[in-house]
Image 1: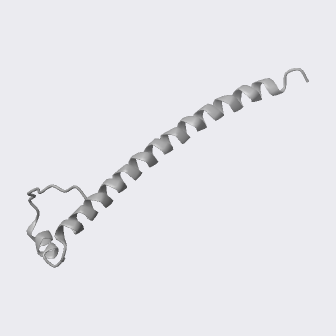
Image 2: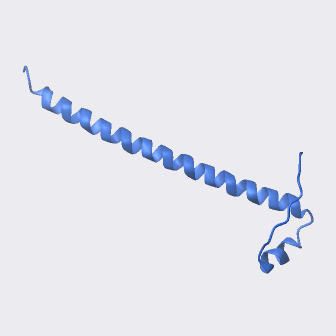
Image 3: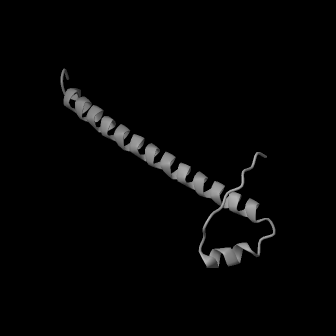
Length: 74
């Protein structure tokens, strides 16, 4: 794995908890990875929900058009 050293500032209570972990770097990397994945999942869910709302609006317009035409010619 390609790694790089960084310095970070954290609240003391988190540092105290982190001191109990044998591999602090791996623990922090996994926490950041999980957070990024959760943000990406939320972004995709919001985009999907918007697409569903847009499609529902288009479907309602089509239904209204068909309702107006369904009685004609009978």
